[in-house]
Structure formats: structure tokens, C-alpha cells
Length: 103
Image (tube, rainbow, N blue to C red):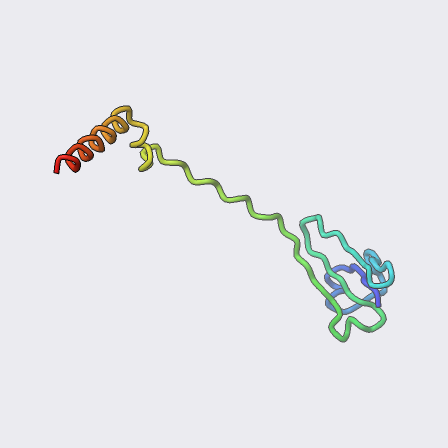
């Protein structure tokens, strides 16, 4: 079997008489780089195309990566940046401790 790159007309009619390129390297190690954005048409010659051994590939550019969402400046953890919060927590904790020891 072989791997022949053909045009769309030859692909549809399984015509292997004038391939654009013969990608056959032997021993089943045929590699075709698909690095150009376009349609590719491959058939297997020697009559195998008529049995369905053909492949059409459309190579497209990848979509752009998603954009990161903006970070909100009023995030819930921003309250921890306030200068009075930590002393207030310690003061409340000290008052609670004193209240518990008095009882």
C-alpha cells in the first residue's frame, strides 16, 4: 500500500495517476507533516482507494488562548490589609480571655 497526496478531484475519483506527492517510505512508517493551514487529500493507490482507503484533512489555525479575567480590587481578603484589623482582633481576644478567667 502507499500514501499519495492528490488534489480534490483525484481524491473524489480515486485517481492515482498524477499525485502531488508520494509520501510512501516503506514498512508502514509514512509520516506527513500537516503544518500548513489548508485541505489535504490522501489516497492509497493500486485500487485500495476504491475500497475506502482515502482521507481528507482540513488543517486550521488553533483558536487564540482564552484571556485571563481581571482581578477585582475589592476582593474579600483585602480587608486583611487594613491597619486596624489585627490590633482589634488581639484586643477582642484579650477581653474574651479576661472575661472567661473571671467567671
